[in-house]
Length: 188
Image (cartoon, rainbow, N blue to C red; front, side):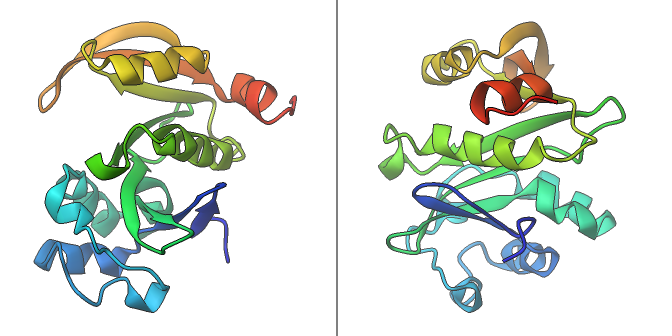
């Protein structure tokens, strides 16, 4: 399968949400047949029971369908073929080559290492894009688990921002060059 459509990690398949699937999700977050043709299911009704970025991503994909590969993926357990999480970049890479990630894992699957696995899957894929120069991760100062993860990955605190939805966030960044060297054993 095309790497732009699916990223594979040890325990997960990260499937791109396709442009026509955004429209179906807008109509019904628990659409019963939506994922069957792709070989997985949404038994836990992930989008209906977890915060998700659909309201922000749907208009972007409608304007730029080729951005679907960046904006939202569902994380599907290889073992059971069910959706347990989602991840995506806020936009395509900007003019400076920065790309910011967001993700969420259903409560029943948290604290099992899926978040870090998702991050590595997404970053390992995107750093191969020559446009991408900087990986960005923003997190609330109160989210100690995410703070611990991002600091252990070598991301550096570069500032703060006030997000209208999430409040105060700290901004962490790492160059794609450093990610390639530190985690994929590649140098440019």
